[in-house]
Length: 356
Image (tube, rainbow, N blue to C red):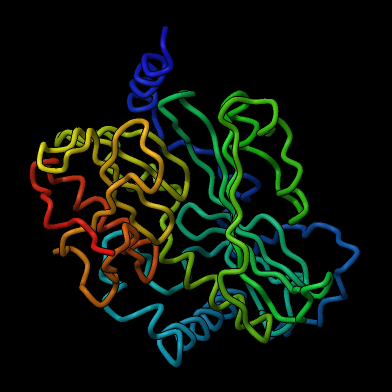
């Protein structure tokens, strides 16, 4: 059986399976709002300051989100979290998403953290870092079904040659195929666990791969880093497999899927002089190209996406001469991707060819 046949057979299993049952890791299922998780030990952890007992913990979480809203709606963050963004279907309102939270061993200036935000779970935290993780299915037409996790963290950059003592936000993805469930359900008790996931081995297992964004942004205080992280997660519906049309009826075929990305392919109209159209989403960016199977990157045609109806124009940037269209947040990119998947390949023409 060829690689493509294996992928097609596996995709049928992937689509028919319940893809909404991904593990949520170490989340406490007790609905009592007083529930606290025991934090991981850390050599860098310092003693938390005593918390006031005169406030209910629900109030602490409400007060946290007042600070998050003030941060997201004002100053430079307004460009990143514009008002219309919250009207998109998959965006989560900036209010406490659950009563489950912790108040222990948190970064300075942070009184509480929610244990869940949509499909994100709080999995590791100390006084200098916070890690949220989403888990879900993966797919590759060459390797079939897989499992993956995606982590977003804020941490104090206080060591190494690039030390600046600021709080950095970055993301990591791990995708595994041979040991899919081990990768998807890996225990993350400290941020170091992201670097040693059992069963994940790009050098030994076909298809296994990881991705790190490096620093996406940085803040001067731990509290600001946490506010930005939480606002971002409310606009980052992960895993993507729960929010994308997996099998469109318009001629597009899923080629790859991870918690933060997906790639679809369709036969290109004759006007492009290429065999395929390829449409990809990577976190908050769409990439659109026309290509032949053996094309090198310079031989592929870069395409601009057409204007969208579902996403206001100020929230994405169509760049002349580039196949890449960045959006203000992943939730906006997802809305744009789903809209484009409703269009058959014949709806796109050479007027979309990027010049330059």
